[in-house]
Length: 341
Image (cartoon, rainbow, N blue to C red; front, side, top):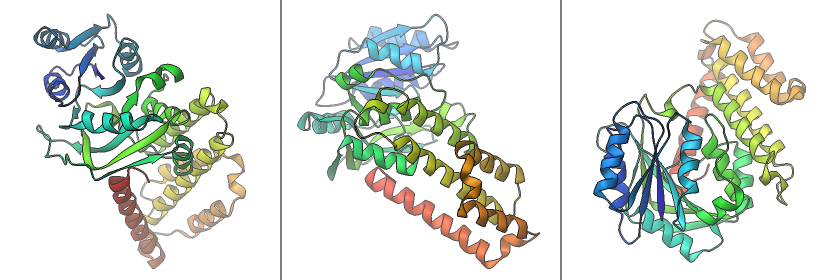
């Protein structure tokens, strides 16, 4: 079992991340820290950890290469049967690796195992649940098809365990700015089955202003980044797998639906940011030039024409906002319990 820890200017967090790996029980773990030319004390801290622990190694970059090449360089020298990608500001929960490897070892067709990640923003992580209740195993193409129908990513990153032989056969992470993980999970599911561990928390993901996931992404950009992930996915080896034909179109339709739905929410909120509504509509047109002929577009245009000051307090607008909130909370609850939307 190899954990690749990507590190750039996370000297403060790195010891805790490493400790969360080497303290795992019932598995043999080796850790590869890849320092991406950090300008703080990260490299010195990493080398100190390597001297203190025989199962911790360090790979260094002489110049900053970004998160994709940082993980890929570590993964290429990994030797464990299984592989985990961990950012230096994230942590594995106690028992995470033994729970995931148990699933993978009992189900040889499974190439990707994940569970629930706890998102936290405090200095110390909250208490995690460590006792699993059951596993779910999906045929990979079924899981992939469902992700295309939703247009959503359901895996944060540190909670995922990969079978290294599958990674080596499909290739490493693609050079995408914000969604290399998403594309990677989807690509793996085109070639292997996917498992989810219910009941237990598999990782802690730290939310803070300096994290890559917190920077430079808004709603419209997020749609564009997910579109890029799907296009890269089906433009590569996954697009040649039997059963994936037409899935790119399915994903695009899901993203267009989301863009129109969100544009409608801007109307229901009183159009406080009309430029946002315009941006969502522009995205929908870009992905599907024929969307302006759709019933959804016509209905949205009619609502926009009738919008006036205070229209957000119309009963229909209030009902739609409430419905959106309930839908969002139900989606989160389903993801929390089952790992999917």
